[in-house]
Amino acid sequence: MHLREPGYSRWHLDYLEALVATGRLADALAFLDHLDGQVASSGRRSAGAVAMTGRAMIHAASGALPEALAAIEPALAWYDSSPLRFDRARTLLIAGRIHRRAKAKRLARDALAEAHREFSAFGAVAWAEQAAAQLARVNLRPPAAGTLTETERRVAELAAAGLTNREVAQQLFLAAKTVEANLARVYRKLGISSRAELGARMGRPLP
Image (cartoon, rainbow, N blue to C red; front, side, top):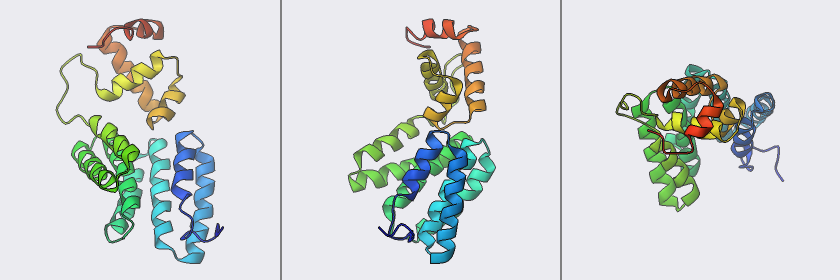
C-alpha cells in the first residue's frame, strides 16, 4: 500500500481537509507531525508542500491568518514549478479561501479564478463549482448600507436553520469568533436581537 512512502499516497490532503472541516485540529496536528516525519525520511518535496498546505488550513481554522498565509505561500511557490497541476489547483482554492478571510480580496479573486480555470480545464466539475462558489463570496465593491454580505448571508441562513456557532464555523471553514462577529453584524443590520427573530426573518428574502 506504500503508506510509508508519501510519494505513492495521494490521500494526505484529503485526510487533513476532513479533519480540519470537522474541527479535529488536534488530530490534524498529530497527523502533520507524522507526515513531517515521512517527508524527512523520504525527501519527497511534494509531500512537504502538502504538509505546508495542511498547516495553513489549521492556522486558518484557528483564526491565525498571518500564519496561515505564511504557510500557504511556499506551498504555492513549489507548485509553480511542479507538474502536479491538479494539486496546485487545490492549493490555489485553499489559498483563495484564506486570502478572502484575511480580506485580501484581489489576491483571493486571483487565486480562486485561477483555480476555477484549472479545474474546468481538467473537467473536474465538482471542484470547479467549489471554486466558483468561493469566488462568488469575494466582494470587491463595498456593499450598500444595511445589505448583508455573502458571508453574513450564509452565516445567517445556517444559524436560522438551527446550527450552533461551532457547527456554522465548521460548515463555512471559519473561526468561531468570525461567526460570532458576522452574526452580530447581521443582527445590527436587520434590527433584531435573537435567533428566534433571525429564524422568522430568514423566512422571507433578506435585504
